Image (cartoon, rainbow, N blue to C red; front, side, top):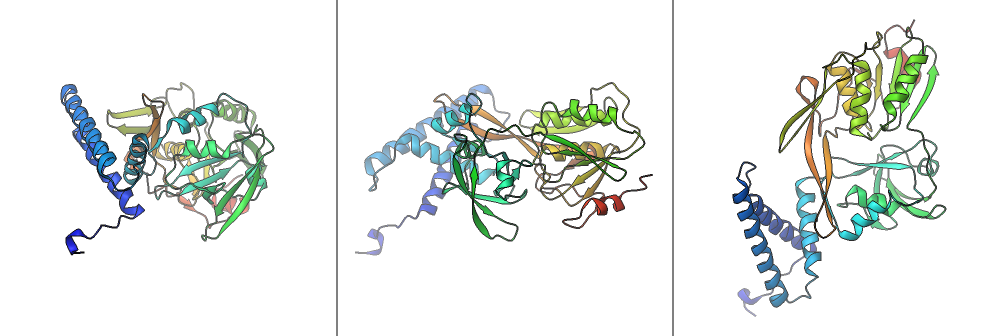
Amino acid sequence: MNRSSRPLRITSTTARRALAALAAALLACACGQRAGDSGARQADHAAAAARLLADALAVIARKAAFAPADSRQIVARMLSDYLGAEDPYSGFMTRDEYAAYRALAKGSYGGIAMDLERRHSGETICYPYAHGPAERAGIAAGERLVSIDGTPVAGKPLPVLAALATGAAGTQVVLQIADAKGATRPVSVTRAHIDAPTLTRDTAGSLQVIRIARFAPNTRSEVAALLAGWDARRPVVFDLRGCGGGDFYAAVDTAMLFLDKGAPIVTVTGREGARLYASTLDRTPPARTPYLWQDEATASAAEVFIAALTGNGRGVSIGMPSAGKGSRQDIFELADGSALILTTGYLTAPRGLAFNGRGLTPMKALAPGAGTAAFANATPSTE
């Protein structure tokens, strides 16, 4: 056999890269790479991309020595590989995966009481709820999720992972977890019906502590009620350690409690331009500046809340640099029932601070694992 006729060995990695490259070519063709193109021009690009894809699939079906996959599977892999290569937060859900995710909101299922966040590195980070099944099983905030019942999580959209972890109450799911040092262990978690509070209150000496596990639609009203019943002369601490975020709009609304009307909270910049979210609440903010306790697992909506207060001079952040999840995603259903998860905007805090992939640096640093006493010592007088 001469060199020119020697068969080319194609590895799975090579195949994934080829699919991603073809997807990139198709999307470049479809989008024209310019957001300013006219509607007619974009339609021409989309038609050309469809023809290219149909031609490529037909050649694969006729000529490929291997048994071709179903055309829909090829397209799904193309989209997944392309989006994953471009952005760790974007992804593709098949029709069955998206249907399973939507079913979570309609049925009565057992969960493990744990939020998941995707880091810029592509790692999937665990945020178990206090006293929930995942925390009781020994999973700590900030640990990395490797697999669910043997299925690797790498490259899979978070809604797909949520569906995989959910099932009948009383059944078990086995998670492969990696700690901060990279050591992995299997953790068996028993699913249960979840009714976990998003906010708890406590006191530590002269400190009044509000612990936010995640932002939810009722967070602002609960925080407002706590503030109304507490001594205005005593310092308030928002403990946001291990808070993976939650509802973006809830974080914006809660920040308004501490800001003057019209104060900037966050700017979201996407393909359609920039949108500024500012305080619309007409009330007098509390006289005392709250303290914001953050760590390396503080992410997303929690970072929006911290940046809004510190950026307007209405909060003091203490702790460790945060996770740096400064983007937002939306789900778009496609004609066949599948769906895309796309990053639609990047977040900028007041004063132009972009924290995606960087995190928020605390105004006062605390050592990892520092407790309430160390936090109290880092604050000004609490008399």
